[in-house]
Image 1 (cartoon, rainbow, N blue to C red):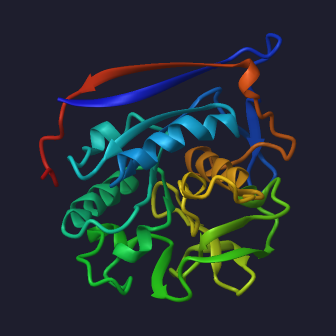
Image 2 (tube, rainbow, N blue to C red):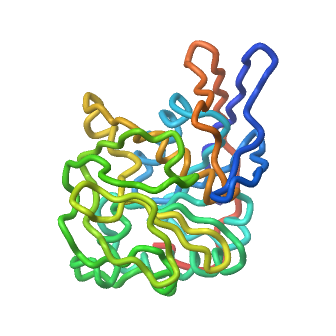
Length: 276
């Protein structure tokens, strides 16, 4: 059995709960449910927990759960319980990544949605770290690990008008960029000042959104000013899940009016893949 922490977020805002619609890149209305269910998958449970505890302070309308792929690899059936998966790493995990990647490939090709973040690319077979790679998922991810100036401090340089860049005036981070080859059929919508890709996406069946940002970075340096950081992740998760994002004036609920209830529940361990 595998225990997963579910953070159920309820917001009390004068009887009005969440924005319920957004728009896609063509201006069409996209319905965004009150809660978007995200499964966070990485090799570091503490990073997952940090996201669960801190992202809701900066964005509304998400429910997060955590899975460490060091313990086991979720089945497609388990992944399908979520609107999107957020996949990233802290360090590298070697042989287990190909099992994770094979499962992500099957999930996306069956219509599932994935958001990728740093340090995913260093474990690709072309990520310059000599690892085994992400298996079949390397055939469909939008950014290929053509190793560049990885993990540098930078700010956003240019971007196009797109749901992924909606509401962003700037982005700053300390572990940015590094990978700058766009897969055929993928679309880049934002670039760092040095010209490397910041945001890209494709839709081989389900949607894959790639950000060359590390989602747990503020945990390492909480005093750094992360302009636009959280809005970028909010946009990425919503666009992956629903194909649209909220208007620029997004409601962010303060801690003073947010009630968080934590509870755990049991799920069956995967029957196949990657446990060690």
